Length: 288
Image (cartoon, rainbow, N blue to C red):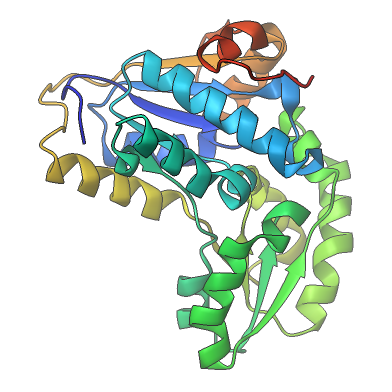
C-alpha cells in the first residue's frame, strides 16, 4: 500500500453502526488517527438499489482517500455485499492499490466452528442476506460441516440504533419477535451481520440471556488492518493516543448525541454536505 505511516485510517458506514468496528480498530491500534464518515443522509442502505449503494460507497472512499487516509475500512455489511469488488476495481483502474480497502464478511466461520447444536442464525439486513458474500461463506464453511443457517432480519432495528434506542423497550420487543423462533429452532450461535447490531447486545442478553453466542466481524477486521499496515511498514510510529474525527452527511447535532451514547465518551461530529462528499465523484448523481 501507498501512503505515510502518520496518515489516518478511514472508516465508512451508512450511519453509526460502523462505530462498532471503529472501537475494535482503536483497541487494536491505539496510536492510529481515525477519520469516520457516516452517510446518514442516505441511511439506511438496505432500502437503496445496488447502483445507489455502489455510488455512495465509492464517493465515501474517495472522500476519505482525498483526505490522505492510508487505508479505508468499509464498515458496512450492505455496502460490502454490493460494492466492495467494484470499489477495488475502480481504484485499481485509477492506479491505486486495491488492498488499501478492507471490507467485512459476516462472521459465520467462527460460529460454525464453535456451534454445539449445529444450528446458527445470521442476523442482518435483507441486502446482506441476499448478497453473494454471505452465500460464499455458507457454501465454504457451513454446508460442508452440516450446519444449518437460519437468516433473520427486521427493518426497524437499524433506525432504532441510529436514533439512540438500541436499549429501549421497543428494541427488546422487536428482538423478542425476531429471535424467539431462532431459539426455538435450536440455534446456539448468532452472527451479527450488520455493524449496527453489536450495539443491540445488551438488549439481546436482556431477552435471551446466554442462549446465543454472539459473533461479529469487528475484531477480525481490526486484526486485518494491523496485518496490512505492518506488511507495508505503515503503522503509526507515534506513542500518543490517536485522534478521532467524525463526519456525517446527516444532522451533526443529533448524531453527536447518539455517538456519545454508543462510544461512552464525547466526540464532536462535523457536518459534511452530500454535495461536498460527491465532489470527488465526477458525474455522480446524488440520491437523497
